[in-house]
Image 1 (tube, rainbow, N blue to C red):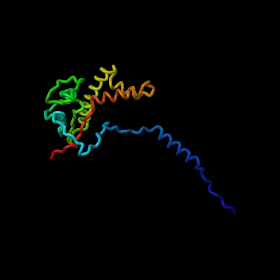
Image 2: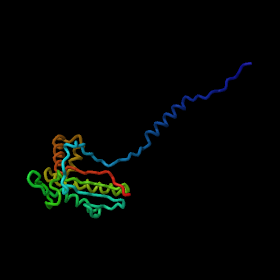
Image 3: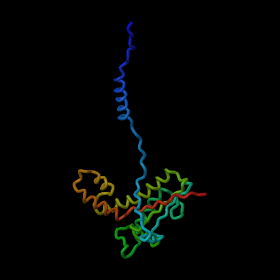
Image 4: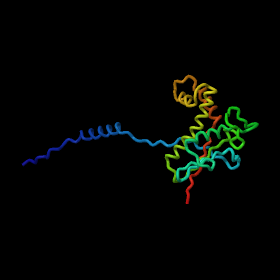
Amino acid sequence: MTRRLAPSVNAGSMADIAFLLLIFFLVTTTIETDHGISRKLPPLIDDAEKTIVKEKNIFRVELNQHNELLVEGAIMDIGALKRAAIAFLDNGAGVGDWQCNYCKGNKDDQSSDHPDKAIISLVNNRETNYGTYVTVQNELVGAYTELRDREAKRLYGVSFKEMKNLLKDASHSNQVLLKERIKKIKSMYPEKLSEAEPVRNY
């Protein structure tokens, strides 16, 4: 008596189907990417190279645990922060080597000497709302951008934002000249935004 073999199922095509499904899901799935705040940290300075910064060249901005904005110790509305930062950066009270011939500020002796010496110090509390923190960051960066736009238009007839967009365009005729101009504008109003370690109230 001969033994009958049980019929087998050909599963070879199952691997192909699974592979095709995998490719389908990889192609059609969108991956969420979180974007942080773009910030370039300053280089480390040796103790021997540290210089003393005048108090008037520091613009102190603080966010407390109640999301209140304090500028130079006084409560300020976030909507007024950009104007206050521009007034500080563009003050130009310096004399001699630090005289600013392009600054349009009030030249107040109690405020910054030169944009290259002006430092914005931002301190936030650990309980500060993230949205408020980002808004304050945007206002401070916006102050630098507005001043750079003004000088770029004055010197080259085009805004700083437009210059940066042109630099991204690979077909632009003179990339080298454009880079030099952007570097010059940045040197006129260097972004010196110091973010100290967040403080916590006990």
